[in-house]
Length: 164
Image (cartoon, rainbow, N blue to C red):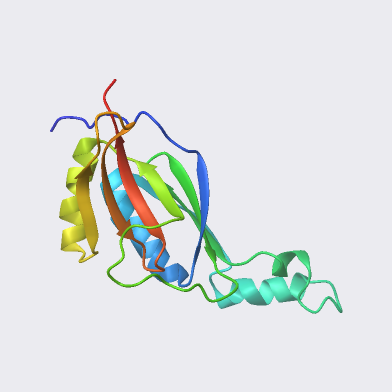
């Protein structure tokens, strides 16, 4: 099997709010990792034991304002060469309409043409609605894109750069 070309542009770290950390971990840590490579990196405050320990360590009379209570539960996942922190949203996030697959803000991840083709296969198999691949004009820095949403309704774009 031929190796996939490395994307030419990459962003080091991104953070995104999600409404369900378990579903987000499954999507980013399994579905997107299958497409772009990577791994589940670390987790914070996902168990009852961790929450109890945080309460125990909180300063007396802090009312939950101590250091351990100031950080929401999160998971860090490597998707391709991008580190993505998945934070539990502290409030309700209004999801876009179910059929809307493009919008802003969106998280853009670099992908090769082969990875976009693989995304069509994987997202189809996982029954994740998507749009694409969409070809862009030759004057665009992006050759093609694929658009979808994560389980929390956050917009994602896999983008393949134009050949130079």
